[in-house]
Image 1 (cartoon, rainbow, N blue to C red):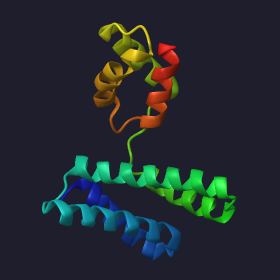
Image 2: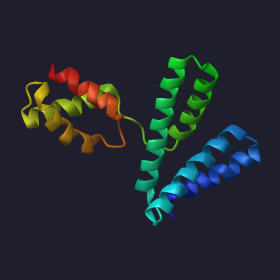
Image 3: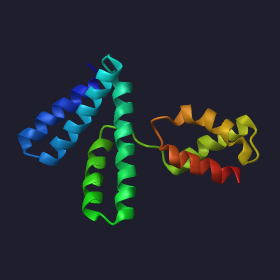
Image 4: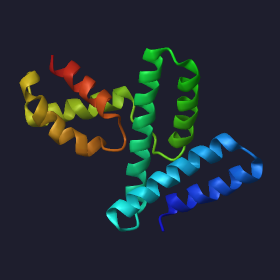
Length: 148
């Protein structure tokens, strides 16, 4: 069993003892998503696999927040933000925009990209470097800005 999954289970027990139902429920949702992925793959996930599931869960929350904000559903925005905050505790520190710009600048120089037509080549080299450490939308935005 992965250490990250064990940490989640221990934190669920701790949240239950503390009576923190919001954290407990969010952790249970995360564990359920991990277990579903294990059933789908028919294998037990390692830490990298668990982290990938948690990253996907965080992305879903961010998209939901944007949708709820557009619809004016502030109570749902607050709920999703609280869940995102819990999930973020189990994810590695995300790269800042400046760090993404530095990595993108290095890849652009390496590839020799000069215009937006080279974006595919740049993204192909850059994404494996920042996978799990940066939001794909932000990376795309930074690369577009640098290639203009």
